[in-house]
Amino acid sequence: MKKIVLDKPVPKLAFEATDGTLTDLSHLKGQNIVLYFYPKDDTPGCTQEGKDFAELYPKFKKLNTQILGISRDNITCHNKFIQKYEFPFPLISDTDQMLCKTFDVLKEKNMYGRLVFGIERSTFLIDSKGIVRQIWRKVKVQNHAQDVLEAVKALTP
Image (cartoon, rainbow, N blue to C red; front, side, top):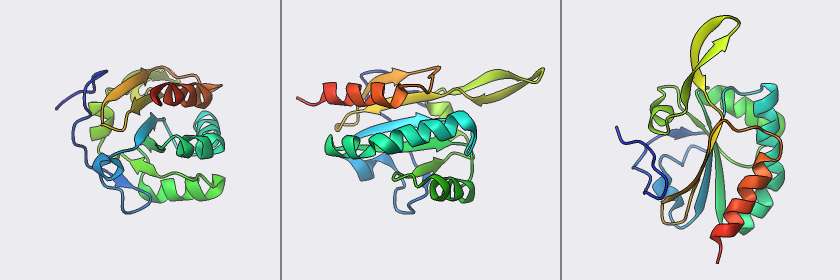
């Protein structure tokens, strides 16, 4: 399995998204793409991150950039999450963890004294040619969406 590498093309990836038509990144060819991985739908940090990206979504769209949130939750859970917070962008379900493994976002975490594997909040900026241009790992939610927007602006000539 290919791993994601900075300044290299993203490998062909198939997935299931809430909009029903988006099945791989080739559908977004010619657009910048922000892929943000988050641990779980409808939890405080993940909700705030989604709301922050939603608030800035019109600015991302003006910069020809699509936002996609990814977690291991299923499509039904994602649809409820989108509806509850009116997110204007699709969410991708990665129940088989193939995207998580490709982007190397599964990390060992200590949850109440028990070691588990979970998603390390991470974001990837892919340019309109399919090249990974920036990677954020161990993301802190506060101001993150704005930082990503600034990085997208820097891509625009």
